[in-house]
Each structure stands twice: as structure tokens, then as C-alpha cells.
Length: 345
Image (cartoon, rainbow, N blue to C red; front, side, top):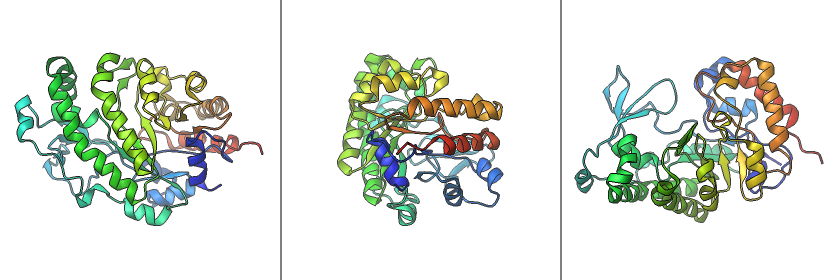
């Protein structure tokens, strides 16, 4: 099998020739520490990754309209003020919908705009059919929440429920079409990257999740499948109280299975392994950023031992290879994966 074939096999819960390595974001600091002068694609090939993407969660630092360059503040295409920090994803600071009536005059970005595809056409030209091409997209929480500010948006679920539904509709008018264009351009795997939880549990009650988030997520999953892509649902945190609903949407895989949030990959494999593939579970906090190398090896071996049997598993971090990941720990994970990844003939 080549890389694309083994990722697809895993997402279809079949047994590939080896456990694929699936990662959406690797920080440039880590890349340069291990392969000075290398770009992401050279590093990806050197590492032997089975997936390839734009290596960022959202906006590039290039060609943004800064409103305060010293503080890294810029206004994104949604009108949300964001701040660039050390990681690839700029943090949302302030949304443009201050009052419910502001939505009446709000216009979302154009999903047909040239910048929607980013570097996907170039990636497709280089890797189509060789590696599984991924794209991080949005479903039904992040973009509507950022238009209001996440705290206010969560309160709106009680105080302004009609507004919440309207915000989801407005943002999905862009996000679903943008995703469809990415798949048409050659993306194999759509990663819906909205986080619904922290380490303690979901950010909203299961009842509110079912009312305000689930229908939009289902629309996104169905649209991606109709476009011809596989779907990986990414959400950090402890999502056990809402996991049945997420699986019922028809996702192909769940990521990143954050261990510090109590996401027990053995338990989840036992309960849901016949319905979804699993992607992730190597802690990118303490384990990849601070732990002794031997502990990284032990955790990686144990995770593969538990998740590998029967197929349906891709190794990945519990979020991303961010700027605080120690290069030697990252390589310990990769080297252990290389030792343990093969399935018996």
C-alpha cells in the first residue's frame, strides 16, 4: 500500500499494511530543529507521513490586514479580530456581531473567492494519489461562536436561541460550500476542527449540543460524504457525554482523543470501533513537550498496542505538533511508530 491507500483503509476500519501516521499541523520550530532549511513538504516526505495538508489550522500570517502589527492583531475575512501568537492558529479576540440586530446587516465571506482553496491545488498536483490529502474545515460551532465571542454565544443558547440558529445558518452558507470546493479540488479527507469541550467536559449541555450544534454537524458530514470525502471529526476535550450523538452523524473517524481529558482509547475502541476509526491519543502536552524520551516511547508503544488490533487506527498527537513539543520527543514517537506500525501478514 502507499500512504493514501493505508489511510483510506484505516478510515474504512480495514487493516492496512501498517498503522498510518496522520498529523494536520507541525510547527515550523520543530521542523527547523530536526531538518534545518527544510520546508513542510520536504519534512513531510523525510518523515514518511501518510497525510499531507496546508499545515495550518486557519489563516496564514501572510497577506492579512493588520490593525496592530506590534500586537499581532488583524481582522479576518469574517470581521473577527484575531491575534497571532506562537502557534499556527490566531486566537479570536472580538467578534463583529455585538447585538442580535447586527446580524441583519452582516455579510459572510464569499465561498467562491480565490483564497478559499489556499495552496490546495499545489498540494494536489504534488501528492494526489500518493498521500491522503487533508483539509481542516469548520462545522457548526467555531465560526458562529467567534462572530459573537464564545462566552456570549454560549449564553445566547439560553438568552437568544433564535440568533444562535441564524448564526449557524449564516456561517454554514460559506463553510459548506468552501469545503465542497476543497474536495472538488482534490482533498481526500475533511477534518472538521471545531472543539466542543475542555478537559472537564463539553462547553454546553448535551441538550444544547443536540439543539444548536448537532444539526449543523450532521449537514457538514453529509455534505462532505456527498462531495466524495472521508470525514474526521476533531474536537479536543472530554466529549464522552455527547459522543454517541457525534458518532451517529456518520463520521468516519474521531480525533484527537485527548488522554488528559479522560479519552480512554481502549474504551472508545471497544465501544465504537465497529463504527468509526480512531486518530490520535499521543499527549502533546506533558508527554511530547516535557516527558523523558523513554516515557514517550512507552506511551506510544502502549497506545499502538491498544488501538492497532483489527485496523481502524491512525497514530497522531492529541492536538498538533505545536511549538513547545520537544524535537527529541517527537522523534521518539516517530521512531517507536516505525518499530511497531506493521501488521502481520
